[in-house]
Image (tube, rainbow over the protein chains, first blue to last red):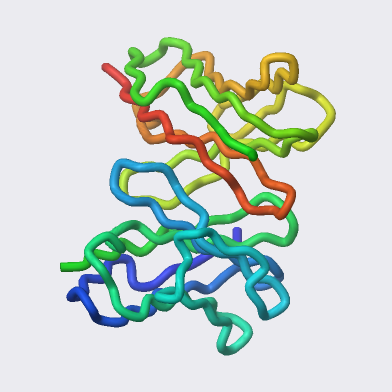
Amino acid sequence: EPEVTQTPSHQVTQMGQEVILRCVPISNHLYFYWYRQILGQKVEFLVSFYNNEISEKSEIFDDQFSVERPDGSNFTLKIRSTKLEDSAMYFCASSAMSPLHFGNGTRLTVT
Amino acid sequence: AQSVTQPDIHITVSEGASLELRCNYSYGATPYLFWYVQSPGQGLQLLLKYFSGDTLVQGIKGFEAEFKRSQSSFNLRKPSVHWSDAAEYFCAVASNTGKLIFGQGTTLQVKP
């Protein structure tokens, strides 16, 4: 069965550094999402992406965040200047319509 | 606004016992509802979904859920729990824009 793959599985970075989290969605899917889960908390929506543009974003998704689909297969989340509170598990998801299929996540640790 | 409430943060059941995880939603129209499971260090795996039709839906790993519109509930059930079912379970509702709104999650512990 096709899967959403995310790399790396764990990323450690220093506060103020830029990070790029990478995702390869399922190949025939058209809708792409990023979610995050701070340790012990619920899974929160960050952004959705369709037709090469952001279709919806949450209040969490401020100017520090950006998404890109650079080559028609990868889907990336960039955090420009990481803060301690960005430490979380970041999940990529994709769908044709519904339901969403999730990757295994990238654990981001900001020190 | 749409929301999902999972009243039980943590549940412990004995292996072989039955299980029910509660989920209540708030949504104006007919909801699209989901249950996902997250094993430690893993991603979110879809257990089952409800879009329309039969209110009792069957999922993977022997799970089922029942949609009750009158109670705004979508509780997850399993007749006999296995030790491998220990995980975190998330109920979610799809918004009218397609994104999922998750509940807080319920952590299931299974006693031998």
